[in-house]
Image 1 (cartoon, rainbow, N blue to C red):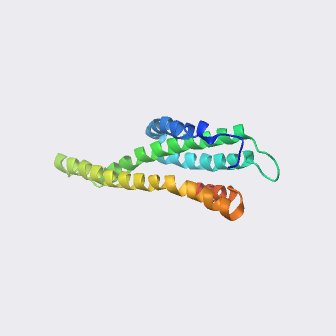
Image 2 (cartoon, rainbow, N blue to C red; image 1 turned 30 degrees about the vertical axis):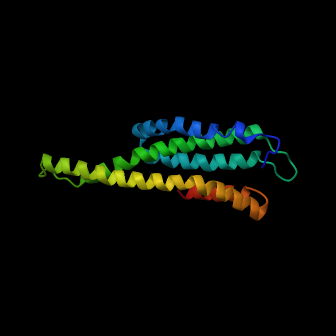
Image 3 (spheres, rainbow, N blue to C red; image 1 turned 90 degrees about the vertical axis):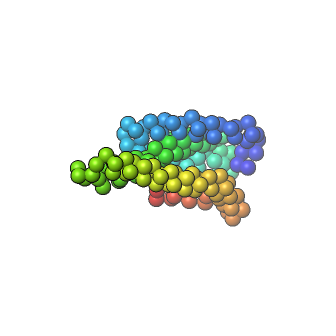
Length: 169
């Protein structure tokens, strides 16, 4: 709706593709540098990318710049893939670390095996919950854009809310 002369179906596939391709990179980066660090910087960069989207949108009579708009959205999808990969890599590490730290030298191999099994169960539950919440984004994000456009005539309100959300994360 922001660029009426552009066919969105010609570009809609780019976001999911880029996000899917960068997800393993996010897991790899989390292994190398730490999941919390990767996730933190991903959220900061996502806020910056949303700000970039806003800079290329049509405003106050200007036609905007579709190429810049598309580039910022592709960057946003790439970052979401990185963040997804780092988060899904970080969750099992957190539970395993927590369970292993509870062990003392007096605990035997049986206790170690039980701790690993317990961490795996807890990780699976947390990953399932995180995946379910993430799937809600497929509804919430387009609904936010629609509500923003209906209320203000622009997607800016939704974008500012996304920036605030990313920074709060």
